[in-house]
Image (cartoon, rainbow, N blue to C red; front, side):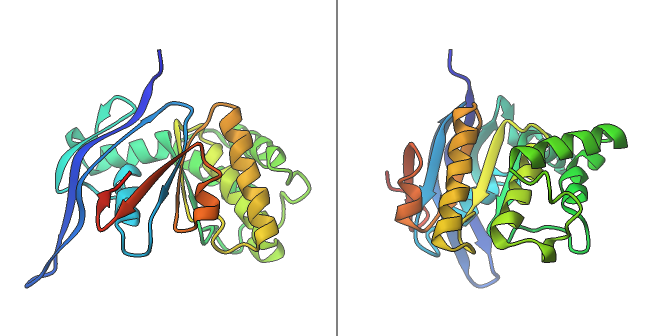
Length: 224
């Protein structure tokens, strides 16, 4: 029986800006099963970033219901959300978000530090994750010593090292040239083939078609 990872039902998100209320998300519902590779596509301002923040437990819906891997998110306090983020979700961002003046190995090991994993185990798991990304010879390199594609591979290794149930990738090829972007998308396909559940947010139709299912967001609504 297929396990449901994301179950979002009739979610809204309204930002109160004093005299103005901005309805960033309006009645969004989304269902993602374990092992899927889904692309959420929409133009700038469509609401896809708001949707990503809610799916990643970085924000809460104003109304509606979100169940992540069987956990009703509305029942969690802020500490509970932080635990869910660290243990269940691996994030990959357009800007990589790597720690400067910190080696690739230390960058990848950092999420395990927050989980209280012993140092020897942290370093072993981080090394294995980087080797999986083809960066076994770059363990001691800092971000400014790596190309954009290599930095994104480090970011993917960091997302994988906690063995999350879900990988959320926000415009992961946005800062890469087309060839390197293809390599990164190829890595996501390899991860998906190995069983990872991936939700990729993009404005680029050429990137979205690489997923096995596309979700279109426009004006705060899921259109298809």
